[in-house]
Amino acid sequence: MTHGSRLVTIFGGSGFVGRHLVRALAREGWRIRVAVRRPDLAGHLQPLGAVGQIHAVQANLRYRDSVARALQGADAAVNLVGILAESGRQSFNAVQAQGARAVAEEAAKAGIARFVQLSAIGADADSAAAYARTKAQGEAFVRAAIPEAVILRPSIVFGPEDQFFNRFARMAQFLPFLPLIGGGETRFQPVFVGDVALAAAKALDGSARAGTTYELGGPDIRSFKALLEYILTVTHRRRLLLPVPFPLARLQASVLEALPGKMLTVDQVTMLETDNVVSSVAEAEGRTLAGLGISPASFEAIVPTYLYSFRPHGQFDRPESAG
Image (cartoon, rainbow, N blue to C red; front, side, top):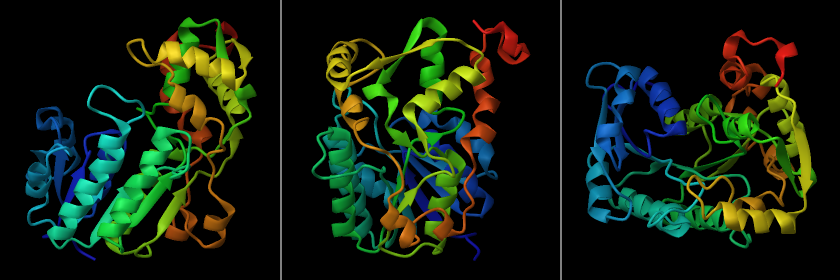
């Protein structure tokens, strides 16, 4: 299928998943309109395509007219906008629930049926965590506006700019220990950002089943503790892994979330009480990467290519120089 004249609008296209999706779609010949709050900060996307193929426009999900303008003339749309912690007017409800609603409803008005919504494994309208609750609300708004939309729910996403492996590797640089929240037993299924982008590209291509929710996980399921141990191994650091019961972790997070950088929030601790893996139902129904014909990359094959910078002596470090 050729896309030479086809236009896709990607909301949040300058972010972590966005830049990988832009690259994947540019290769397939799509014309790409990246809708972001600050187009002046999206220049790094230009080299990913041919001259004139990628264009950034200003859009803020709180302002419907800007969303509608960004969708004018588009054949397809993708909503990647999400946050990991609230900040000012960037609340979970405003961004992940009402934001998704604005994009889907304006896309429906524009006659766009090919729509991809990035959600997350753990999205649940009844969750105690506002992050998971608003992800589920966003999904519901999308389904109501565009029933044939494809929803993607990844586990924790890894890649050079990720917020998981990098965050704990950075913490290990200056802390004498790493917190094993809830004993570190929560299970994850880390998925490569390139595979998430490829899944979205396939959904736009018509390779995914319309109106379906896909759960995206990598080939390996690991506990939180095992992942922290892996980070320490790759970064050549010896640190104590200190079990922190959930009630104490919530107390610590209530202090940390008030500090700049929000190293840990109460909502994130709540999310850690539930495993973050592809469900057996999604596996059985083929609503996975394999179901899309994608063979997922292992975190062990990719994470060392960017975590080496956290070693005591960077890429020239030797394992015996663990600090």
